Amino acid sequence: MPSTNRMLRILGLFALDRPVISPEWLMEELGVSRASVYRDLGQLTRAGMLERVADRGYVLGPMVVELDRQIRLTDPLLEAAQELPGKLADETGGTILLCRFHANKVMCIHQVNGQNPALSVSYERGRAMPLYRGATSKIILACLPAAQLKQLWASERQTLVAAGLPDDYAQLVEVLAALRQTGYCVTAGEVDPDAVGFAVALRDGEQLLGSLSVVMPAAPLTAAQRKTTLSRLQSAAGRIEGRLQDQRDKARAQKSKTETP
Image (cartoon, rainbow, N blue to C red; front, side, top):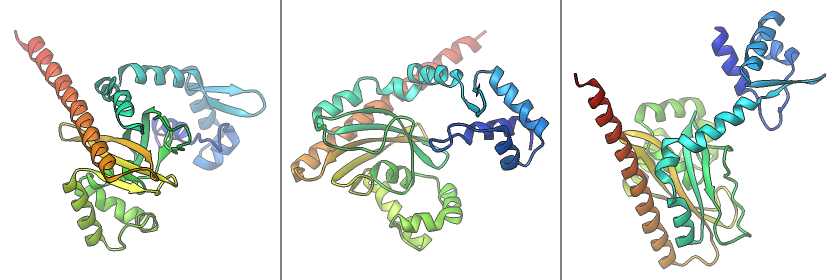
């Protein structure tokens, strides 16, 4: 395995239940020599991506925090969303989730809490969630390109079926096509008990970015509230995509200007 790929894999091995990684564990996990592991750890430490903790091993370093701040300030999706999630939370009373699709997972990049402090929402910034449960994830699943969906079916069929999706690929395609045609997804209790999720996909042109969601308590929710929530959610998503289009147009205009002799 090339050294660059191996270093990227090392970074991906950190988890909440594995915050500290030792060189000895890495040697066994990666199947490489002691010299290779220490060379990679040294490069990552010098770059600030890792930090050595005495007698224990290595933890994620301060550069990760610096990069997180950079994302918060410059992510095009966050820039396009700006005040809209907060406004949507005020209008609906629900918790708003702005999520990205990443490595067959759904990652919350921004959350605005609603008016109900008792509502528990499992999604939170930086926490990877499965692609197969809940409206936030399922609307992304429904919008995946056919080739990517087929690859997922081949590698994660049991997980899909365990999440309640059809145990037949043709039926799965049919279910997801209907969801995609509807343009939104609504689920109840699939991620958090007593919660209803409303979600729409977000695209930057033809590129699927993720989803925008509203999570609300199920009990007091009326049919009229559901309808209003969906309408406001779709309006907010449309404005975000419109701002992403403006970003693309601005970039094209700037590129054209610089290329003109």
